Length: 241
Length: 229
Image (cartoon, rainbow over all chains, first blue to last red; front, side, top):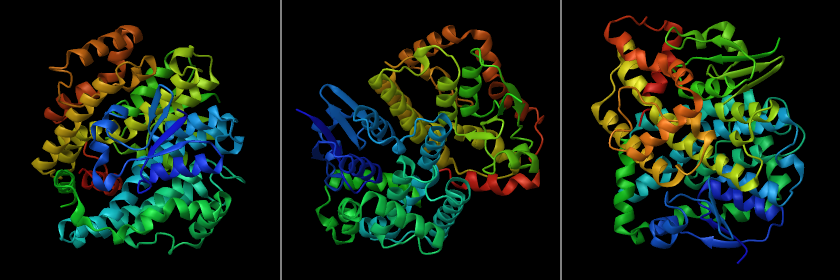
């Protein structure tokens, strides 16, 4: 059994791993763990990752979770081109810095946007309060401003002239609200231009292939949602009240 | 000018950097007092426009985020291999922990400082429901820490969760034993030094010895309080 990647492309970290592996022609078995059906709570998946999070990697007996770690592992093991995770200490530190910052600064608010714009109304039948929505919109706006000022600045990509893991992770995160028909790239031409450069560096075909499931999310019939999963979601949604 | 580290030991990520650097890396400590609002001062904003600690400064090179700083220091300076082992799978495990820590420990375990000290200082109220939710999140995180990560070694040492006012490891003998090993490894004195400020702050708050944060810091602090889930 070769390399296995446990993924659901609805999740931004999964898309980062998928795109990276495909782009670098790393052979792997795609193990689909359907978040919408609650498969991450199945016994089979808990055996792989007791924390029930995606993505996971299985390479022989070695099991690894956390997209940052998986991307790092794939870079080293498959000797991918050095621009993805540059060897120069200062440049690599910039990638590490961005990867650490983006968890709470980008990934989290972008994910919240999708919940607010699509999933909460769809699953619970209720809209999120205008106040809460405004708060998240502010957070997203603020984060994107910081992204442009501190990480992108006037460069083509975060580390300079070439795409790195940082750009890949940033972009898949920022695409999350697109599932709820919300486009964060509209207000800044600088951001929109960077977005296009990253898409082209990845290859538009691969990029949109990875985002297909997200883009079609609005068509999901959530009446098929497993009641146990629905209960968990409703608990988790308490934070949005 | 050599290596400068901008830290406030009230902050958990600063502990990790401080404890690690004290392992024989020469640096100048630049204290940044969060309660006094020094992180929003003009001087500090020029060092880090994000107005957060910890920050590393080496000549013109400025680096934020404790995970990035720790990795940078362990690669740049001659430190024992066990901190950031060169073996691929072991190193990947460390990145795995750092990724999980960023999601599940960092924001979560920092919340008690806000709910018990900083919010009251500002006159802001945090609903009891949020405090309870935070407590549950910490419990869950500790369980995962015990179940999944406890096998991992020294790099975790500086990352141990410290949450104000909670005896975190009560009823968790495995974690308590791990903490004992970590403190023995690092040295009790260093640990006391690093954790001193956070351990004494509740007392200072009770005795009303803490200054009210300056108005310039209020906006960012109130935003942080509003983000508590």
